Length: 597
Image (cartoon, rainbow, N blue to C red; front, top):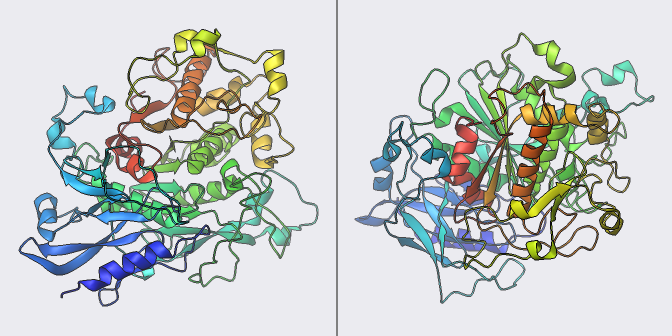
């Protein structure tokens, strides 16, 4: 079967059709005869028969870009015989690769730099055997000096780096498997943290206020007669401000394929992790401007969250949805996530599920951090519902927080420089984007509440979503209700202990060091005293947790006083890019490895 022109017309059409709204009506057609499609906002990359038959296309993979604002870059040549080198009977998908727009495919054999989490284990295992370094690690992308890339609004793209890692493309989908599905959200989920005198008991019994849109690599997960005994792990990927849930499905299924080739990742019975054992769900927190997917047969409407008011991308802080038509009820995006998590924790449906990973990047990283802090879901096996499930073996829940713009701090302290001189960046000749150490010199900073003058210049610094004080301009009743139950007379030790006991990993792109504009207080770079860049904000928040750990004596954590609260890793040579973060060795370890704390 020879197909030459179809690929290039399809890719061009995909790049030209991008808009600010996420359009799930437009999966990208790769090949009609093969019934192969890619999710919206991706492009089709051909797999050729062999280097001797480069015109014969035998399949396709799907290439993402780092943002829906940017078109996809070039696909790197990929041949079926490449997959044969690394394929096994249980993980046959090798997959293609590609580059960001403005870059071109290049190859070399650079020195392999071992990630820090593997460095600690190098004496116990053969790294070359357990970590797959084929293709992605030996190949890279280099800047195309003759290209003049533009974004989807026609603005020039200024690429900063001479080289970048390649994207791992995901396997293409059949038309049915790239459909959008709906998870019914019961009225009770909306009422768990608020009350309504207008609803009767009959209203509440098996009544739904709407459904949460989602993609899945295994089709609809809510069928009444469905029981998935083969699924051992589940990954829930929360999109960023672009609401491009389809690209998160693609990035994460490619990540799962890579993880399945690494022998260090095994199931509870010591079987190697298989792609077929891993469910990937990408919820879509729809906005009114998004095109409603036509694929659901349910009469229940999709739930939407305002994307502009009171602040942009309201789903990220647990905002209430737009009211439904039938009951005039709203639901927090965090409550909808609780429903999804608890559906996966249902042993009648997923009897052998061992771990659920909830991972988010950028605005999705903000989402999962604030949700992990405030959720009362019984799947965590703690808080007010712990005793109800004490005898039930529930899946482990891990939360992976990647490159968020800000964090919800647990108290009113932030890091302040001890002097004006200390606040000046040390000029050691190393660019922050190439520095793999700590950006904040903590020996020159102090964690403390702001002074009266500092607080007066930024009264919002500890209001939600930046802290946990109630914020009337950014209402979040789910968060305030759940958090206030754990805070007594201003003391948040119980809240800290619950959050510290949860399995949370933070990922920061080494190159995600751009100074951010101020969203509150007109402070310039500091933005509520959290720090100038995403990477620095992450390290400051993580360090604050370690300080709080030393102040709280009885949290019931294992490992003694030397045990860190949570984990944090810096992903080398990656900036603000969900695909490269997820598909990095650090990203794969965060989702499928064991916790080192």
